[in-house]
Image 1 (tube, helix red, strand yellow):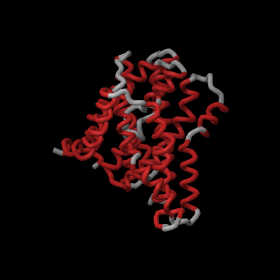
Image 2 (cartoon, one colour):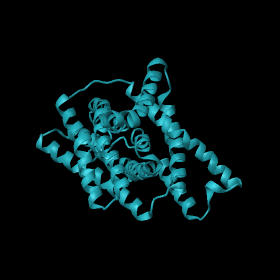
Image 3 (tube, helix red, strand yellow):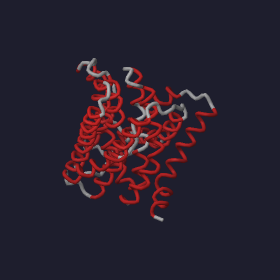
Image 4 (cartoon, helix red, strand yellow):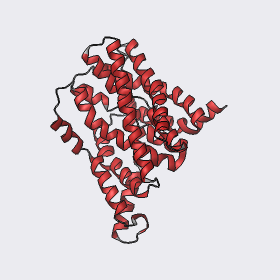
Length: 307
């Protein structure tokens, strides 16, 4: 009963929107790169700005959530590296494994799931986790994907090309300037309401994009290694996150959000990195699809515990 309730209450709304995106992509020749840019450069940053301005999370708790996000990424990366070495994988396979286990789909999938599961308070904490993951993906994924061929300057340039970085800066500036943007009736208030209007469109588009990306289709290239990655990403990562959250003394809601976010499937954008640096892109694409489908079961099980 609790299992069915967790799926219907939280994951079914998410699955319906993702399935709609999948069906649209299969039926129409949609311009997926343009929609991705719309999400990355307009709607996503708008969501970050408005949430930071409105967020009701104490500074100490926010820093601990960010620290948990970083620790989960690095911790599961170390476990993945050791696993790859024990399995005696070649370099390209270890790189692909790390891309799939370290970076989770905490945006497209994690944010709406956290909102449905834990309400607005949970969503605000999930956004902090997501912001940290976004920065980590840009700063760590490039040198990992290139297996040492990318220098520090390139990674820094990648980081500062991210619109999310500037959205965080603008949001923090607005929050700590003492200007109460949500309740102003002047031009600044109107600007904020326009940004908030765009932010409202971010989550639906993120889920539609996830469905469209899954509709591109792929096949499982390496069943054994895919199974290993799925266990690490969907099974080991939430256990690790729970231990880290307890060690950081996160309160009950923040702990549940961190564990849920850490349980997300492999990030879709890792396919792009694997393509650019030839790190087994077909394998990475297959892992993204498999872990996303399996997550409907694993997340439902997890939500019966977390809720």
